[in-house]
Image (tube, rainbow, N blue to C red; front, top):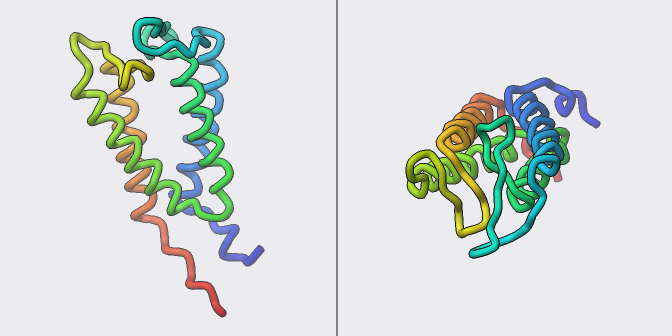
Amino acid sequence: MRPSDQTATAARLFVLVVGTALVIGGIAGFAYESSFGTGASYVSDDILGTFPTNGWDNILHLAAGLACLAAASRAPRAMALVLGAGFTVLAIWGFIVTDHGAGNLLDVIPVATADNILHLAIGLSGIAAGLISPRPPAAVA
């Protein structure tokens, strides 16, 4: 590992903190609701009475969190930008489908106003962390 790979950057900190939080949230979500129903059999429950979840939502959070942790040492800047863009789009989409504080994406992923605000904060933070972190040096052939 080159010395520059060990440098702490905003992007690396972002993917480590957010990745860990997403993994913990994904695991904890299964204690609230673990069903994978869709359409008419769609079910969700609220974590701490605020954040709706189900099995699909938990898997999404686990996958995003594990991807962040995997990218922390190799491509934290790229991961922060990709996750930031993804969560920003997710938040905007969530705000569009949320009616009276609740909704769902594609009859699969539950969302609420609090989720959308959190997704937007994660998204914009990821984009900011990626943009203020230095670009990795070009590979030498």
